[in-house]
Length: 369
Image (cartoon, rainbow, N blue to C red; front, top):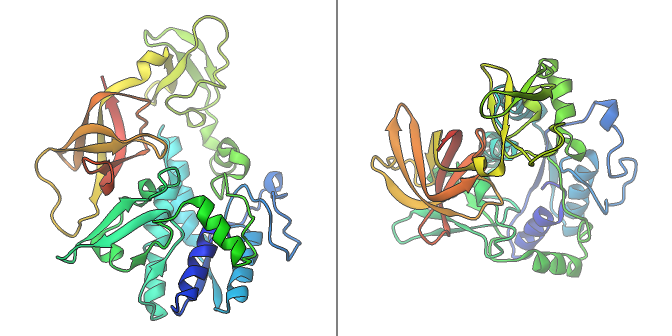
């Protein structure tokens, strides 16, 4: 229970159906930076917050507890702060230092929520672990579990869940998979849940107000290493303060004025250079990735190329492609049509030909022409 309306309603819905529910909130991060000390919600108030730009704060934990009390089930807070720092924040910083753009929500789900938390649920003798993710889960006649996109495609979160395996899927519940946000909000108000009117979190929990650059400066001062901004021919157009503050596809903040608009096409670590060019340079058909996992695991991974649809960011429409192993744990993705801003560090998630079932995914390493 993150303290938001979705997980609150999921818990209340299961409790109302007669399940014995235990509410759990993970304390994963506490902002000790004075620059971010004043959070969007009032941490001195016991009343539920109306708005919170990020999740997992002190007020969110109180809100989750208030929901549990209103529904009559126990609520616990588990301290995962050290694990979160090691598995999510440190990886986030390391990836940016390597010139990549990580997705910490994928890491959090993989390393915490469906790893240690699932083990904690077993320790509490719970048959299932339920979350407020918008995703659908079904079991076929052969006992194979299938992870599918939510009915409300605008809220679908399967992109962040692609690392789930069969043993994990067999223990999970996604009560919101068949619902849309308006229904969840309406039903929450009908139940008089304390979080019913709470707005959605907008930021990554440890990146208040979206200022990831400040987080990098705090955790890794080495990120501030100036270098050149160059075009594709190598001509110097300006100077940057550090590769970590840029990502493929970025247009703003380049400090280059006049002429045609330019975008970040790539980050050259060898030269410590930001490579920029026209928007057309962002269009690529091929990508290479690694760390592939499949929702059918522990069944064997594919050994031959296969056709599927692929999302290269959470808001990306699944695009037709051929995916296949190329050795050394690396995989090739060849799209039927060029895709914009294939970004190293982000996830490429595979879906079936209908774009409905999530088959797995990998981490993008590079793009090609």
